[in-house]
Every structure is written in structure tokens, then in C-alpha cells.
Length: 326
Image: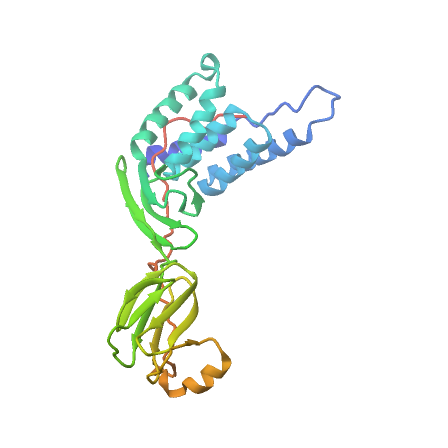
């Protein structure tokens, strides 16, 4: 920071401390009294170049009493911190209320700060799929659907995109003054179809494997199915029909190894859900891992890992002049 800028900062001590709380004999408005206290505290902190704390004091004052002078001083603090996005917002608020005829040099200086701040900010454009995914930029939600755009200060930023049934994504970006960053994010679904695998322990000519009444194979079958209830049937000449109801969930992998049994005359149907059958089936269902051959596995998409990035802003340029009084 230049000596000239430091001299400007010290000039805030020359601010006129007087403040009209109302006509003599009138009880002062509590909000106005509190707003003035925050305002004066902000001036004191700015004199000590504690701009972050000063900005918070001016922000609290502005929330109680909306005055252009407070908005202007708040903008000065944000400008010193190189928080140009916030400075632009405060300057816009000041310009909406300020009287050009009475503000004089302060208004001219506000215009200069605004022009510089607008050149200094960057822009982040995020296009997301699914369109209703939530997008957080540095912990703040970007409202809307599909593409989202926001102005950001130069430096590091973190974008988090998430949606129900999808793995979240975390992106860290480095913004430079005047640059537009574009990112396209397509989330990976964690609700993938279930996978069913059916095989026979013995090949029998003329065998049909059916799922929900539709033929899907002869000696084996592999297919993806929607979650829910399904029926697996195996039919072969001179063999009893095997029927196996199954209930599938997202991301599941179910494997069935079925034995058609001995040749029969007249056929019949074996319903594998019967408890007696499970006692008889025994070794005909092979093992998968430590369990029976009916194996279950969850295939979940792995979301990206990441952390958070803090943004440290140092004191930057300051305009020539002094903070204006209440």
C-alpha cells in the first residue's frame, strides 16, 4: 500500500462526529441510536485499517438505518479488502439514494471505484445436469435451474453440485480479474438399474430362461432390470419348471445358478421360494464369496473427493479522499 493511500486512510479521523438524533426533547429512535453506534465503531476500526471488522460494523448500521453515507463507507472497506463484488453492491446501493448535487466529490469517487471494481471481478458460469441440481458457490446457493452464473472476486473458489440420487461433485477454480470461467458438470447417478445374472448347472437342449414371461436366454442370461419385483422361470423338456420370484433394488447385482433336477415324466413346477425347497436345494446353489450362490453386490458410483478452499484477501487499492460522515 502506497504512502499516499496510507495518508488517505488516516484522514478518516477527520470525520465530523456530530449526529442529529432528533429534535430537542424528542426521545431518540432506538434503531437510529444503535445504527450510529455501529457507524462510529466502523469509523474507528477503519482508522486502524481493520477493514474487515469495519465493514461488518457498517453493514450492521446499514441494516438498521438505510443511509447513503453508510453504504459509501461500507463500499470503501470492501474496496480496500479487494472484495469487489461486495463493493459493487454497496456502491449501487449508495448511487440509488445519493443526491448528486450534495454528494459532490464522494459521488465522483464512487463512480471511479465502481468502474475499477467492475473490471476487477470475474464471472463463473456453471452448466449442470440434471438441471434441478443444487449449486453452491463458496457455501452460498446459486438459485435457478440448469446453467447458473455469478460474479466472484479474484482468487480461489469452491463449487459444489449435488442432486438426489447422484454422486456430488466438488470443483475448485481460480478466478482472474475480467475472466469468465465456464464449467459443465454432469452428475453420475447412484440409482443404476439392477443387474440379474442367471445360469444353469446343466445344459439341457430346448431350455428357455424367462424373466417376467419374456425369453432372455437358453443356458444363461445377463440383463439389467428396473428395481422391483420380477419372476425368473426356467423351462426345459421333461424337466420341472423352476420359478424364482426376486425383488431387486438400485445398484444390486443378483446371480442365480439353477439346477433343473432329474428328468421327469409329466413335468411340474418348482417354486424356489418354498421353505422346503431351500432345505433340499442345499449344494445345488453354489457359493459366491462366503454366501450362497445368490450373490448380492452394490455397485455405487464413486463421487469425487475434495476439500474447501479459503480465500484470503489483502488490503488493496483505496481511492483518494475520506470516508463521508453520517
